[in-house]
Image (cartoon, rainbow, N blue to C red; front, side):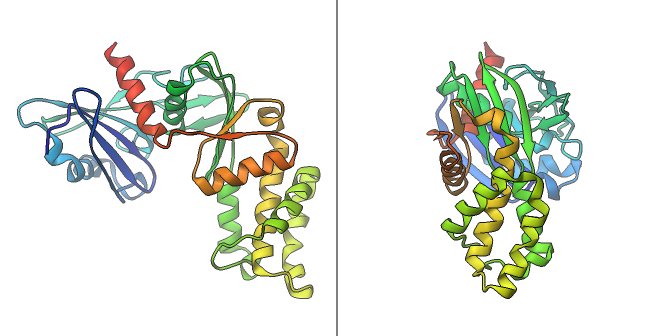
Length: 301
């Protein structure tokens, strides 16, 4: 295996993913492991990195490693402070040098982003945003990054202006696993599309009634024979509809790009279109890598 010129890494809560980059910017190797931040103590990060990258390191020189994501959290390798928006998504603040014992590596962790009024934070998504702006530097609109904690991000002039986070994905998981509604939902996660869109309209029009609408799923299954797939679609539609009601300033009458898994991207685009908006999917499947490369190039400039 050819030694890497430098290494890019996206270190999340559950997984570590890295790319070995060659002298011409080419990807020499891509690797991943389940050594996420959530399962490591600070002294375990370097061994986890070396398990994936040991044979990619030249023995006679130092290989730079640039990391984004949860390795920079308070519970991670070393805390990388947040940069205050508005600022560029990549290197809005200086990266933090992580302590290492192996003389073959020099590790830097990128900062996340934060805002006040209302308070919010992101760590990892800013690198995807930097990757997107590397492809579309003149973008003026909103990026929607759906997931466990969905980010709605206003971007213009190469900067993140402001953002909000919705806990929709986590709430869906908590309700599905720990609430009384778990007895009504599809065990395979299948969601009826018609039930989803009907509940989407309800959640969007009546977000203040979300608590009552959610509970109605249980009696509908007990008394009216609501099918599990319909119950799952209804839960998803209510939560996403309520989220979109709160995020209207981000997606109505704006250029919106959705950055996420194919399933969630399709669902959010369909939801916005059903409610009178429009959105498109990001076309680059490796935005985190593109963002790390853009940050590395800025640092080298």
